[in-house]
Amino acid sequence: MSSGATDLGSITATAGDPARGTDQLATTSADRRPGAIRRRRRSYLLFAAFAFPNLILIAVFAYWPIIENIYLSFTSWDFISPKAEWVGLLNYTGLFTSWSFPATLLRTLIWVVAVVVITMVIGLALALLFSLRIRGTTAVQTLAFSPHVLSGAAIATIWLLIFDPNTGLSRLIFNAFGADSPAWITDSSWALPALIIVSIWKGLGFVAIVYLVGIQQIPNEVLEAARIDGAGRWSTLTQVIFPLLSPTTFFLIITQTISAFQAFDVIAMMTSGGPAGATTTLSWFIYDEAFNRTNVGVSSAASMIMFVILMAITALQFRFVERRVHY
Amino acid sequence: MTAMPTTAMTPTKQTQDAQVRSSTRRRTPWWGVVALVVGALVFLIPLYLFVSTAFKTNADINSWPLRLIPRSLTLENFVNAWELAPFGQFLINSVVVAVIGMALKVLLAIFTAYAFAYLPFPKKNWLFLFMLGALMVPGHVTLLVNYITVGHLHLVNTYAGLILPGIASAFGTFLLRQYFLSIPAEVLEAAQLDGAGHLRTIGSFIVPMARPAIITVGLIALIDEWNGFVWPLIVTNSVNMRTLPIGLLYLKENDGINDWGALMAGTLFVVLPMAIVLLLAQRYIVAGLAGSAVRR
Image 1 (tube, rainbow over the protein chains, first blue to last red):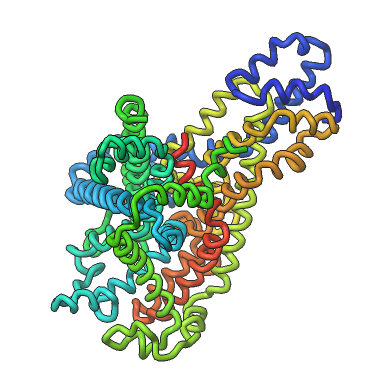
Image 2: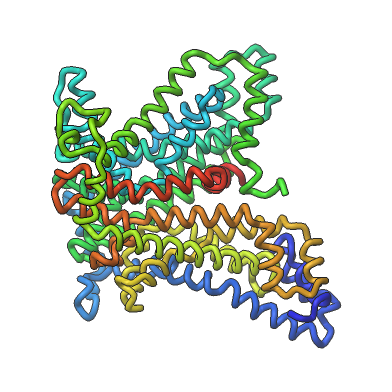
């Protein structure tokens, strides 16, 4: 590294597009000089020293789990036995012939669709509201965004307080309409809606901010042109703004769906999958089977099912982005 | 520097643009004001009830109708929370995990990004794709095997076990690499002419110039580490190794939820540091989380 100016070549040659960078270097005439090979080898070593710790961690903690998970899903194991026992497809057939797992998948679907659709619709409305730039908007934006940054576990306890049927805000609201507050999290028909409300409340600010950034990137001239053409508020919205926001919408649907599938802390803190499984989504099921029931094989089979679902959604993203979404 | 992904859209600039724009448009509609107030209340009321309950006396908490304005304030709930569970220890654990985790993550990201931006390596593009591919692996799916891996390494119930799986960074590295590549080549040439080696180039030129991006990556890492729930839940098994969010489970389980005051006091411990971080560094966080989402 002391060679100073002579190192310049290697840096400037690779700065820029990585597709050009490395391979071109080998064909440069300067590199045929005796010192060049040694210098390049040292650059390789340096690259390894800089990047490999990160890449190895990624291999161990992101890729290896998928491979190991595939194996474990064909075995039966309880963490303690010396060896996992090969059981073939038994974990998978067991899941789909039981009554509870298909119900869990259906519940997860309801959860994901409800959370994503409602959050997106209200979030977009909120973004349009923010874009009016009424006085005080910035403060409300920060307020709405804050749940996204705060611990899900903490948000869950805050909402436990709100939902308390004896002393919570819920009782105040229901009493105002002359009714008793439902027991929310201990009532199996109200528990899932309660968690959906909390999840929406937590995600709303993020969706709104992302949409707001999208709205602000719409060129002023486009809006001016729409107005000159005589478009009213509503037709500007539906004919101009919504189509221009479609990449943002699509991005949000995908990312929100993926994170809704994996939602865990709010469920763990508020209901632990109960009452009577009413809030057991796929993510709780995976955790519960492994760490409460020590059914490692069943849990990894469920993990693989989640993996396949989320991969399919991601693949959809790539296909869809190329074809339909208007840029 | 305006081409850089994380800073180009700072809220202050947005605000100015939008103000210029809205002044040329229609006047503020009354329903907009009403909707904004309703929106504010939806977020404010739960937060207000939470914070006020943390300072309410038990008599106020348990009385009906709901006391929106407490008759008197007390710090008793904080004492109770502290006695029900070792919150001091939880706090130490959370700070250690969040700060060290963030520092290591940022450090790894800087070096990896530098390598990918400026150093040659055979099949570098493949390695880059390998790294980005990790973004598609769902975190929840990796839990079980990572627990087994950390078990093999004898790191269950240790700080290292808490921190290690979280410090690899594909997104942060990607963000920093993009930023590094937008730094003008002349700067690096100047550094080289000064006789600076790679470490000095990083320390004295790259890092200062990429500060906004590094702060963004660091803040998001800090927030993630601090709020981490499922991993700390499974990788720790003794009370004294738990982090703050898990600590809330103890307040909930110890007394059912009879002691709302203590639970809300504990929750305040968890929320307050990140609330302060948000208020101080909002533009970096929004730029990182939201800005990068829209820009491609």
